[in-house]
Every structure is written in C-alpha cells, then in structure tokens.
Image 1 (cartoon, rainbow, N blue to C red):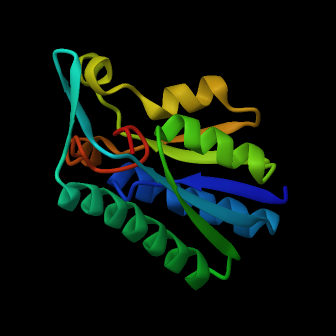
Image 2 (spheres, helix red, strand yellow):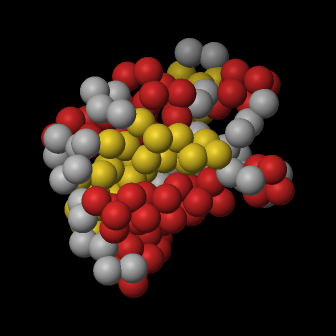
Amino acid sequence: MKTILLATDGSPSAQKATGVAIELASATNAVLRIVSAWRIPVYEYGYVPAQYVPELVDAQREGAQSAVERAVDAATAAGVVATFELRQGDAADEICAAADEVKADMIVLGAHGWGAVRRLFFGSVSTSVLHRASCPVLVVRAEPEEQGRETVGAGTADSGV
C-alpha cells in the first residue's frame, strides 16, 4: 500500500477513523493523504437559493482547516508521513475525486451512525463514497456513546462536509 486517503470533518467518528488510518499507514509504511471538503451553505426557499452570510462560509472553511490540521498533527506524532488538502464542494464527490487523483489504495472515513430520518434529510457521505469510489473503502463507525455527540453541521464524513 502506497497511499491511504483519510476523509475527515473532525467529528468523533472522523477522529476514530483518523486513528485507524494512522495505524494502517504506519503498519504498511503508506503516505497518509488527509482531505476535508467544505461547501458554501445554501438553503432553497421555493425556487431561489439563498446563500449564507460570508461569516458562515468562513466558518465552514475554518472548520475543515482545523480538522485536517489536527489529523496531520496526530499522524506526524505517530511518525506517519501525512499531506493534506482542503476541497470545496460536495463531500462524496470531492473525496472520490481526491482518491482518484492521488491513486489512493484505500479511503478511510468515519460514519456518524445517523438513523433513517437524518440520512433522508442530510444524506450519507460514507454510503455514497462506498458505492462510488474506485478503490477499497473502510468505514469506521463511532462508538454508541460518541454517536449521540455527533452534530448536524459538524463538517466531513456524514454531515455533508
């Protein structure tokens, strides 16, 4: 294995996935490519999309930046070579595109463990990546007590990054 792509939003499930990805990269001497995707939040009221104020866009970008920085710090502390990238757009699209671009041998990402109603409204990034990726995907589930702490707008894995 040469490259493992870790997708993170900094949530508890993504933090658990970070630990797993670091262990795999260390065991296989692979480079860890860390990606966080963010998007400009848009609500649709009727037919006209309404964008948030610039401060909310900055907050999305800063959240993604913080998530990758924490993951890079953890990888470096474990002696794993890590690079990172921030991407703007749909999380699943960006994760799959990043994996293709670096010819990743595997994608590792967390799953929030949301129920059917939340998945219906917010989608599931991990499920989408699992079905669309051109390489193997390892989905790391949060512990049951961590699943309750996941927040709707947390960032990458299943929140719509």
